Image 1 (cartoon, rainbow, N blue to C red):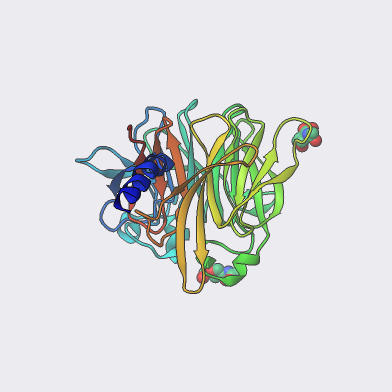
Image 2: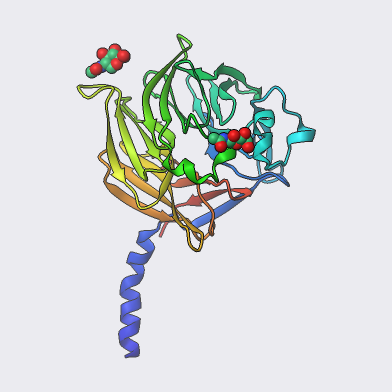
Length: 331
Ligand SMILES: *[C@@H]1O[C@H](CO)[C@@H](O)[C@H](O)[C@H]1NC(C)=O
Ligand SMILES: *[C@@H]1O[C@H](CO)[C@@H](O)[C@H](O)[C@H]1NC(C)=O
């Protein structure tokens, strides 16, 4: 009997380990009082990570001695005295609340979407970002949740979660049934904003494909990933790419061409409990891998899983005060 269980354990071990190669975890703590890194990314020189936090700042990680420092902010009304460390959503319109950002490494610009204030850009020295747009189709940008730069055309795609509700209303039960979200394009050469699709169920986190032929985004409430075609015979139309067992947040291009990471929270209401995952899918919606994040993100939602170098996952969560890094280990 003992010999049999040893046999069973030994023969199952390699497949268990192979199931999760991202087994090394590094935790980069935010400055004291800071919380909620929703978006995380490296810049063109692989410096950072940068993250956008609840009190309205975009921070940049320097090294283990210095930690994170202030990099950029969106609201001209923001003061450090009033805003640093705040988690009060009602201060959002004053302090700003960047929920997403995306580097355009070709022109050395960081585009930022602020949930309350609109679309911004900032240069490599950071500081106060410049407002690019705060309305689309004559309607206010009400609840911006995500952004990505088209790697081919350099156009910018953003998601506005709802025309009715904003970040202060996320605990409202009615948000779940809302379908007034929009997918929007910003053309930086013409400074032009175009609404591509309306009637979406809390859209978040667009990601344009490597070849610029389509953009994926999630519908948080509808629990699915949608593909919107930019080129080809199906251009300007969309289709459901994959239904998910939980609520998806940001979609990000993975290191391999044609692959994407989606942050997914499986939420149980009674008793209230959240289990966060990273879902890796391909451009056809096939599921490639599921990364369980519960070990370091216990009962908190995860907003983004961003892969670098094919080996490293940066993870952001509005419920934590650190940026997590999972690395592949060699066997
Ligand atoms: C959202 O929250 C704000 C601030 O509390 C409030 O003024 C507004 O009426 C709310 N919107 C809805 C649709 O409930
Ligand atoms: C998609 O929309 C753009 C902009 O309105 C237009 O130029 C293009 O011809 C459309 N493509 C298709 C296939 O309908």
